[in-house]
Image (cartoon, rainbow, N blue to C red; front, side):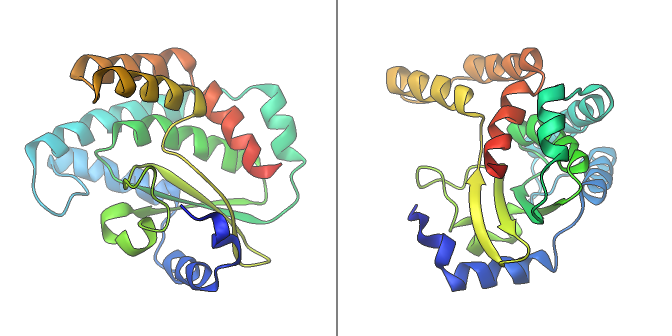
Amino acid sequence: MNKQYLKNSAINSLIKSSLNKAISYEEYRDQVVQYAKNRTSSNPTPSEAHSQYTILNNSRMKRLDRTLKIEDQVINKLKTYSEKVTWLVLTESWCGDAAQVLPVINKLATTAENIDLRILYRDENTELMDHFLTNESRSIPKLIAFDTGKQEVLKEWGPYPQVLSEKIKNFKDIHGSLTPKFKEEIQIWYNKNKGKSIALDLLKLID
């Protein structure tokens, strides 16, 4: 994607209007809980697979919200960050990567006084999503760092921490696409990493 979005008034205007309908992390979690209870998902087209993934993701986020610990070096840097920024995240309830990533993003945003986390569903906001593609794909989660004062995009992040992106790229280079077994290995990697790589990546957004 052309990184000139920094000075693209059309994109900045789209983000400002999108923020009017964005929700908080707490609202998002409440909605995912309801989707899981009702055996549905944020996908507007009913799908048993998406419903099952949403149920699983709700359990993952519930566990991470309760147990996730952020390292002191990350906390110290976040507490000294003085710029007012919105982290706008595009996601869906059924996305396995988002379930691992969003609780980390939320922990960091709540630690930094001047970072406001807001969330949008990707499939309800495709116009915005299409400005922030990953290898021409609508990959999620996608975080857009938006300067509240200057009203412009600063940086973007997602859908994976850099170290995992490299593992995925190497696997695709060899095998062509991700296998179900490799996708399971990704979730195992997330569980073992405990959000550390995600947190360190996100610190780069406030440099």
